[in-house]
Length: 132
Image 1 (spheres, one colour):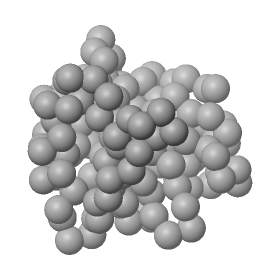
Image 2: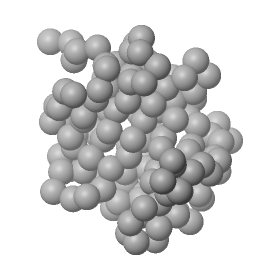
Image 3: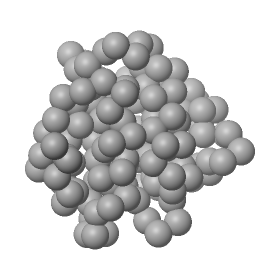
């Protein structure tokens, strides 16, 4: 797994990596530095998916805000369950790195109260390397 530090300005670069991944199990996690807040992304041939777990009390408290956030015209929302019975909300974003980066940045601001200068950690598995 690769880990890179950055800010909101770097989200699009990492979304491009996700879209270029050839392994269908590739994923990207964007975490807000100094917190437990994160969003996890995967990609299919049709969309970039945000997987929002509803495992902790803090995540469950954000369920309605996440549902509301995913009501935009170019997004769709569904609920799924993990093998252990845990609940997840899955929100499909356009399969476009620029638009997905805009949406991801807005989600980090709206859900977690983050500002654009906050540090982010990008963790990816099975993704191409970050271009130098």
